[in-house]
Image (cartoon, rainbow, N blue to C red):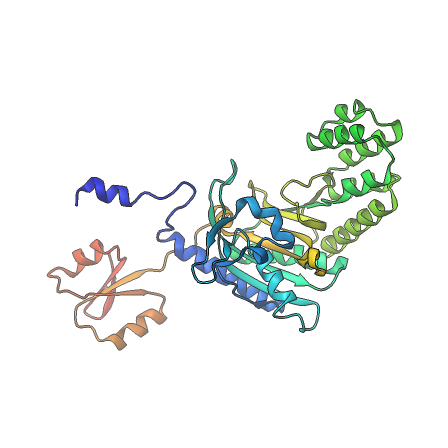
Length: 387
């Protein structure tokens, strides 16, 4: 086989990559830390399969990711299956089927890899690890706040500090639109102007003055949470929209009380990427970088189209972004021990924090062999000698 053939076999599809040492170990450790924090707050882990029947995977909230789902034919059942692009819908399925008789609220956690048909400009990776939680069967501000606070707690446990949280109400614009009587074309132009964050476009949309002022007021509410909520409180929102704004204010109050000093912002007109959220939603960022580390919010767990649905909230942590935002822990020192060292003699060194690298072939120069194997120490005359 030629060297060109070997190089060719090392190529991977766009958006897919091998995770090599030490990054693979860092990711595994971070996932373990996250799952442990979840367990400390009563979240029990579930492990759904990598592929499912299409109708289960793409029902309910999964429909929002149907275009991002790899599909294949199951040769056994002759039914179409999908490879999971996200784990939330799988955990929701487990909750409303296998665990439907468990007491609510139900707290579940998960961790695993997902794969999507295409990446984005900001996130070109198509396969990445997710860990997260779902709090199912209750609709309250306390539950919404718990999701935010647990996400922050988990990211800090992994090693990301100086966090900020941006809160959204993805259904607020629709609730406002449903409560004002405006021509369809004018409303369409208003929605497009909001998407562009274009206050001038709102004024030119053709809506009446009251509706235009209302939508402009929503746009002006984006920013620091205290100022944004004060702006929302000034608006004469339709009843449904006012209830959503009140829930957001309550969640902000709870989070701020628990995490004094945590920067909180709101953007009440943002909904892109939050298509299946039904209430207060949020993203967590590191102040030193603007890449999203975690995302979550309220949604309908299960299959509303079949009348099987429960209110839920939760979040997902994106491990690739987290590793990029956190400092790598110190590497464990590697101790080279010579051929014939008894297996039991490794344990005392491992208890001192060394990774023991046992010789499996004779080496005339232990120091040189230890360096070749990237060891920091070699066992010479019973001592761990630094190299």
